[in-house]
Length: 292
Image 1: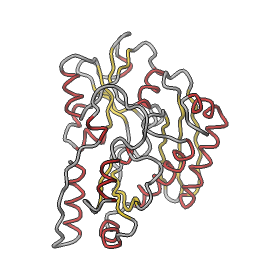
Image 2 (image 1 turned 90 degrees about the vertical axis):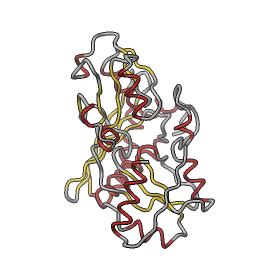
Image 3 (image 1 turned 180 degrees about the vertical axis):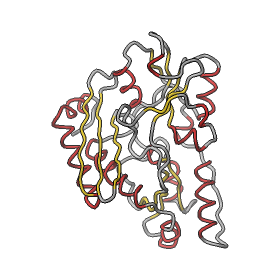
Image 4 (image 1 turned 120 degrees about the vertical axis):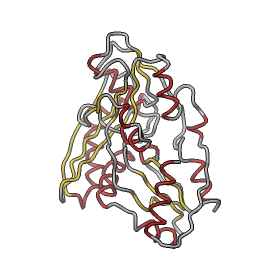
């Protein structure tokens, strides 16, 4: 809702007199608050996309880390806002850094990507699923059900909870999710008016970053049920993309980086995906049922 309100405010500010109505919805990912998200894709976008296709809404606002690599026919990602902090956040009431957690400490996170990288770095910890909205997850921490939790820095900052972050995990240490920290706007392909309105909000650097990251993710068959990570950094006309494929237990991790022209970000993402597959990512993904 914060993201939707934010986009609505930007549209009203950019287009004087424009009426914007919010249509609150609950997604499958919101409803399933216990255990891991198993099977399927688009847990946090499916219902919103159905509303677009049925013309109950004109645009949908997404956290890009939740958006599958493939778009449903008839829909398109039309604009991306400037990126927030892409890093993962370590949050604990008793420990200032991940490295300070004692052996056997219990850490909660709903992300397989975070779980795999956490288990690789600290195999001595007890890593458990933790679902629900940000407030619910922090409440579980405050109730001492967990010694620490991992969340997205961007989400905490947007909700005014940045002070809860005890350690910002560097992107070269914990590779973020595809599109982490970026808000995307989805519209119907044939809705020229809405596409024109939201185009005014598009950030070029975010679009380039996503072109690289999502091209890599598409080739790897990535989804919220596969431990795939990727993060692109734009520097002038150059893009540097880091990708990661991991087994859920963190025992096997393949990581690689490529750099190229920002104008060829999509091709760079595909090339890095092939490098990851050849370096050992293919058998990991096949073991998870991903056809590569």
